[in-house]
Image (cartoon, one colour):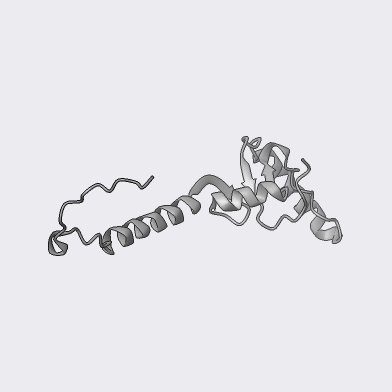
Length: 122
């Protein structure tokens, strides 16, 4: 049994839609996407680094993975001065005692150490 052919209307090639793709809408969309990707990946956090300044999100993630987060309430107090020189030892101890007395207890803050190399303990 032969399939029955359905008659088609005549086509005029000059009136047919050429179906071409424009360059500019895609290009502009790609540029906007690249800007958003770069801005999203380089987002600044409010967390300080050991070197000073604010950490990027990528730096924060890397510091978390390498045990590079330091908590201010867990940081050890500054060590007392070395007593190698007996003449300067009393003065250095007095200065260290004044600094310790004037120092306020650390607020709960996080710092990012970008140079940490230990693996994450989890």
